[in-house]
Amino acid sequence: MIQNNSDSPSISGETDSIVEHPLNVTRLEVTRLGFNTSLSSEQRAVLLSAIGDPDDRVRAGALGALVRLSGKEADQAVIEPAEVEAAWRAAQVDQSPNVRRRAAELAPKVRDLLIVLVIELAEDSDETVAEAAAWALGEMVGEQYQREDTALADATLERLAISHKDALVREACVAALGAREVGLSTILAACSDKPAVRRRAVLALSPFEGPEVDAALQNALTDRDWQVRQAAEDLLGIDAERQGKDDGDDGADEDASQDADQLGG
Image 1 (cartoon, rainbow, N blue to C red):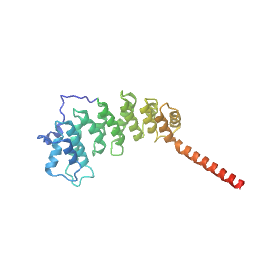
Image 2 (cartoon, rainbow, N blue to C red):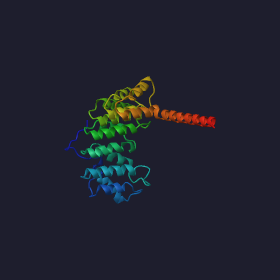
Image 3 (cartoon, one colour):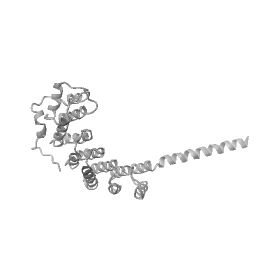
Image 4 (cartoon, one colour):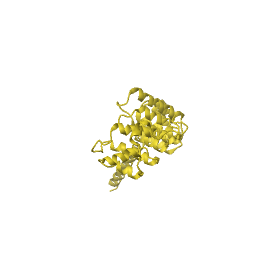
């Protein structure tokens, strides 16, 4: 588990060479640079240097800008993929949970990022970091990830969905399992957790079928939390069926009224 160790460096050795001379910039400045379609050499140096800024808000903003510029929005490849990955790895072990959380949020957008690195963040000692990492794992699906790594991600999410002390983390893990379409038994177990987790568990049942799923949804219809009941109704299409019946009844009454009028006339 990653600990908040104030004695550890905020950046890894991989990025030492690009932050030897930190510049005095603000979070707003680095954020704005991330929306440029091209960068001058000076602006590029500012962003790379900001990864080592003393202010954790600037470091988080710089990472977001670098990731954005490495995407399709950038006209020129002024930020190399290796530089983005190095910056992300620095943020992953940053002493500030704000920076680690930002790294987790951006993980699905970092090209060729190893999913095991995000799994490490899901084990973070800070609940907000772990929650963000769980969400990210739900987004990191596809053939670009090695099977062994995805299996480890699935197992980690299942374990944390049941055992993590923080309900928000459990909720995020359950949602990620649903997005990854795995862990049915764990999702079913989560249907007995706290209301917010139960709500998310019901929604996470969407990609699954079978008698166990049907039974869980039927049980959720009588849950004491109205949002859990609403989620089950949405998945079962009860509102649509009820609306259709109501519309049909209204139409039948209207026809009967018209017939009576005609007979009376």
